Image (cartoon, rainbow, N blue to C red; front, side):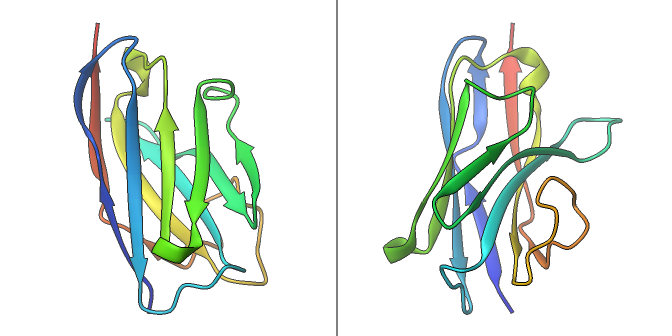
Length: 123
């Protein structure tokens, strides 16, 4: 059982930056894919970014603004969010997909999820 704890969220203004962290424990391996999803109020959970080994994958709405990275020594994945917009407001969830890795842009196939952390961007 992998446990995930998100941190780094909060309230910021449009144009600001935040870095979310997801600390993993309970048997996380470098072969696991890790992803970030978000869910705004009244919306479906949306793919934000994922990383498999060192290769990042991004949703269209965040390309060029967000960067996913991982530090295997710290068992942590990060989401650097720049040029934040009010439409980025959501609860952000960290997730892990064990091999065989599925389609990383979908919630289907992810095995573990964090509790989520609120990011609010004011205009």
